[in-house]
Length: 91
Image 1 (cartoon, rainbow, N blue to C red):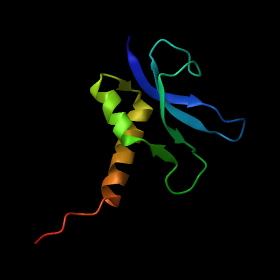
Image 2 (tube, rainbow, N blue to C red):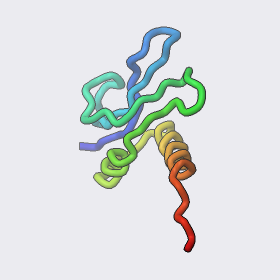
Image 3 (cartoon, rainbow, N blue to C red):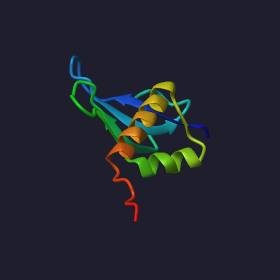
């Protein structure tokens, strides 16, 4: 059972909304997902993607492969999370 981290479309015409899901590689784009781990709303300003990074790391450790688009989005989300996290205080 090969798993992919990918986008599935749930929005309407001219109102795009995507869910970030873990699904079997052979299933349809909008087919059943193993787990929903985030959302992507491309029309929002600022940070259009919300991911549960702990679940992303879990599925990557179990062998799930992100699509090219999701690989780029995960990298971007990691950079954003690192920028928000406070730097350790030097004593």
